[in-house]
View 1 (cartoon, helix red, strand yellow):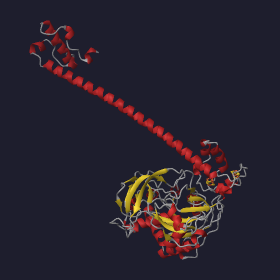
View 2: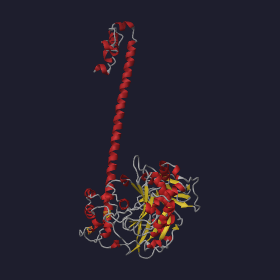
View 3: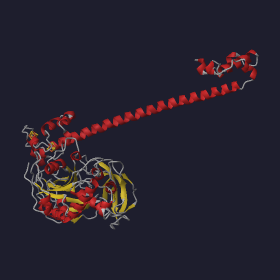
View 4: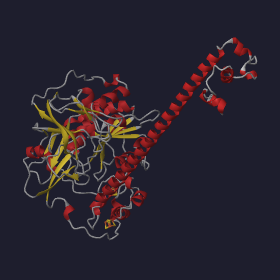
Length: 559
Ligand code: SF4
Ligand code: SF4
């Protein structure tokens, strides 16, 4: 347990914040000064914007435009296609030139469907737009709908649709809303810049989120390596004068920005394994998401851009840029002075949790917060991999209480049941284990591989079950049709029989007089029997056809 953090401010006196420590973690070099030395700029409009329809967790959005269509800035170009999905909006006005497969930012390196827009340079917004000047007039449900329509997803990296995370559900109480300003990963400074420049927007976004969640207190956690951002945020909160909101300075330690680690540091509570933070009354959102919520409600602007850090020793002028989604990475690098010699790796995200890009033609998407161009010796990933010496350092560094060494052996052996027994899916892929491993084993890569394999197997299993379910449903339909056909035939037969009975009843009175009186229930012959009697009598009198030509008796009677 760590010492209480006493803020020397009015709010701070009201909200004395005690901090806790999470297990594991590391202190890698920050390298944040690289991109902080230049001011925030707006990225130039590229020649083409490439917008993948899957920029979030959940079902990909469905295109609502065709090649050749003109679009306006903020117009929906792909609608959400499921309960967990988010629409995509045109980042600028222009013309749709293509809907086709393109390389997208994904570790698999596979292509995916993208809508390509050629900007017209006019930046013409869709109209009318309806900014909301007093969000408290809206119900939480109405706010969530606006946030959903604006295509907002978690901008901390997960890209989970925000409206879902702002819906605690019936009977759930949110005691604490945490705004994650830790930004613990080395090199990345986009949240730092955001707080320096847009602190009041972040705060307004927080207030909207609090209203949507009907939450109690709010805490904004910021690592102590961002003093300017901290003071900017603190000033905004003090100006608001709300004693339920506090800004807390956190000790710099990777991965404090992990959701579970941040909750532990700020509340002392552990999120139970396999559960969501909501189970312990906490909801955590990213700073950039808060600003996107503000833009959606107060300015009626959907999510079409964000601040991205372009950094690394491989780029001439590292800086932060406000970037429209769909902008190719190559355009950002060009605006930052181009590549330096010796660039060997291009990474989307930070050095710990990012993944290598195989091309700089790939566009930035909602989940992207950093482009890192690294020189040959900048990242220590090129060292030779040696055998595991069972030193246990990886376990000590793991903030998720896992046993990376055991997980490594089982992943390597493709024994996915055993690796799951070691709680593989609790791994947050922070890379601490790989970072401390003296044998340079890329442990986190093995865990990503194992997860992907397990997901692929589950998809295959799901596909097979779905096929079997469809086959069973088809067989059931065939059987039902057969039963219905038989039933129809039976009814037709019965109707024919009933008609014959009716005709028999209308036969001449002399014939009927031969039959006993009374109804069937009382032992009277049935109409069929009477029919047969009539025909027998006709044959006897020579007016009926021979016996072999007589109508067959009804099924019921023949049985
Ligand atoms: S840190 Fe590396 S060498 Fe040490 S036990 Fe873990 S995997 Fe093995
Ligand atoms: S990558 Fe996974 S196993 Fe490795 S330290 Fe992070 S949480 Fe633990």
